[in-house]
Image (cartoon, rainbow, N blue to C red; front, side):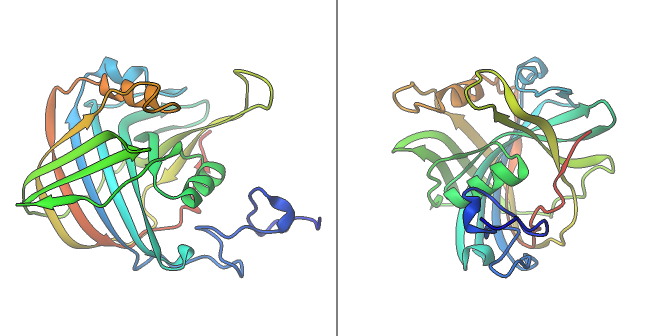
Length: 272
């Protein structure tokens, strides 16, 4: 095996050389995401602060109103996948991180589902996203309503329903002290139960991309987390059931946004 090039990215299996992915093409260059189209469907609801405490990683606490946002995103025409698409579904919680050296405010992403293996592998290993696999079929659209679903082996475990959609304004800028999206990066040690080789908080910094909005709809929405048995979701039932326990105090609206422009997340960094 040749020595690794410190200017290239590698993932297992390393013996074959540098790995192509979202942040590295066959010739080592970075991809251009300036015109990459996406559709983002989001629903938010107010829960109780104490319900979020158990979902907080080390050095974190809920920030402000305990609003949970469930977000379905379809990414299309991706150069790093030679023009293919994939979808993702995430949960975001408002959080303050108070570490040994720095304090930041942002949105903590405790779990993210995607329907392709390649972004899951690269995102877990290179970025520290808590990514899992599931099927994310296209939405069902009928008479002004939209329904998104997440399934594993045919079992539906999340449902997002949109209604009363009408064209609306684009989202405003985030607060000046909004740092970005936070992740709890954890890699277990080999053959040592309960011990981590790596455990750290990492940040996807806000900004870094010019986003152009094509169409925006706003309206009402509801999310259902379907309580599931071990037989239905052998490796994820505990996650879905914990989300199903979050009380809904009130629904905080919904949106569907068609836009262009994103970044490759090469600015990801470890929080101190």
